[in-house]
Image (spheres, one colour):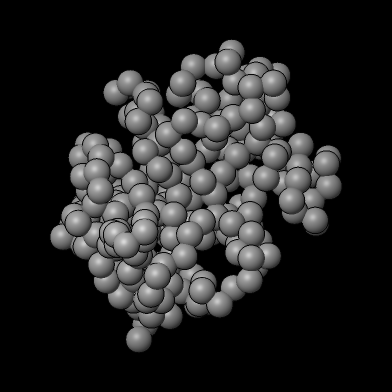
Length: 237
C-alpha cells in the first residue's frame, strides 16, 4: 500500500495497438510497472520493442488502446485535451536526441519558450529563470550565443535547461546522448546524475548499455513486453 501512495507513475496492463487497414500491430502487450518520485529509470530494447511507444504514452503525447496510466494519482485517459496540454507543460520536461532548439533565438530565449504558456510567469521572471537554469547546467558564460555557436554537448545542456525551466515533476529523455561522442555523453549523463541527486525524477530511453547503467533501474523491453527489470547500484557512478 505504501508503494502505491508513493508512486508517481502507475501502469496497469497497458496495451497499444496500431491499425493500418486490416493489419493490427501490437506495440505494447500488457505493460505494468510503477515509478516512484525521484527514481532514475532507463528503458532499453531493440528497434520495435515498444520503448518509444511507451515513452510517448508516459509523456502524455499518445494514449494507450487499453489499460490504465495514472500520473500522480490521476487517470490520464480521463483528462481532456486542455488538461493533457497543461500536464505536458507544467509537470513534464522533454529532452530529445536532436535538441530541437530554434536556431535564430539565443539560448536564453530558447530556454524561456516553455514559460510562454505559463500564465503566472511574466517575461522578466521567465528571463531570470532561464538564466538560472543555464547557469545550473554550466552555460552561464554563453548566454548571448545562438545554438549553432555551441558544441553538441552544450546544445544538449541548453535542451536540458529548457526541460527544467518549468520545474517539472518528471524529465523524459529520449536518446539524449545519441548524437554525442563518448566524452560528451559522459558529461551529459553526469549532469543527469546531479539532477537526480537533487531530487529530479528521470526516465531515459537509450540503446546504449553504458548509458543505461547510470540509472537506478533498467527496464528491458522486447516485442512490446517487459523482458526484465534490472536494479542497478545507485553508487555505480
